[in-house]
Every structure is written in structure tokens, then in C-alpha cells.
Length: 151
Image 1 (tube, rainbow, N blue to C red):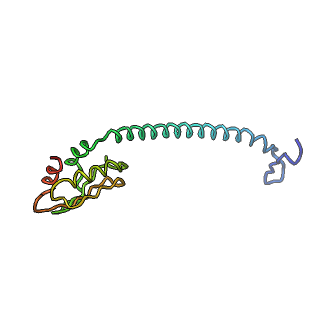
Image 2: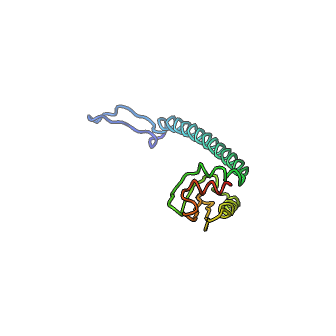
Image 3: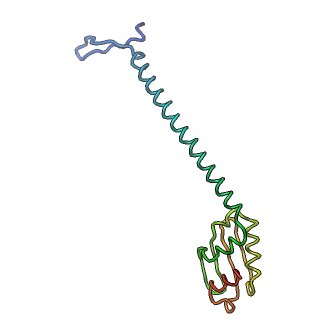
């Protein structure tokens, strides 16, 4: 050991009480820190990989479920849709099944528009929202409109 590597501890009286090599202390501490870091990093990586797998499985299940939706399924679910707003002559419904289903949204819009006295229909694949303008005299309530659409 060289003098540059050795550290001497001196007490207040000025006498040398101990000497040590900092590298001898840092070595085991560094090894323990490195080992703990590697275990932690390995655990985090393991959990991350499992979360990615779970997310991919959920996406695949949702895609399969959404692809199996038919227009008849959506029209049957209109009665269970969340009513965002309902004033005479105007209604907005929310159906999460319509999200990311542009073709199905177009079919739903056509089916609702085909009902008598429905002026216009907008269906959003982004929000899963259906906005319908209709004759309030012909359909005094949203339920009456939904029955006409289902018929």
C-alpha cells in the first residue's frame, strides 16, 4: 500500500490513532450497492414485462370483442346507453361499444336516420356518442324514439 492510498486518522491531541485504506472500505460497499441495484433492476424489468403482456392480452380481448359487434347488438343496447342529454327533439347517448368502430358508427347513424321524423344523426367513433335530432311532436320522449329505431 502506498502512502497516497492510506488515510491516517488523527485524534485531537495530534497522535495518529488509526490508518486505513478507503479502497478497502469502498470495495465491499460498492459491491453490495451494485448487487442491490442489479436485483432491483431485474425485478423492475420482470414486472414491466408482465405489465406489457397483460396490456397486450387486454387489447387483444377488446379487439376480438369489438370485431364481433353487429348493428343489431348496438341497436339492442340503445336502451341501456348512458343518456348524456335529453331535451325534446334532441338526445345524446353514449355507447362505449362504438369507440374506434367507424364502420359500425356509420351503420348506426343510417339505422337511426331511417326512423320516421328523425332529422339528423351524428355518431362519433372517437367518443362513442350518438347525437340525434328528431321531431318532438312525433316522439314525446327518448324512449318513444328508441322504440321506433328498434322497430
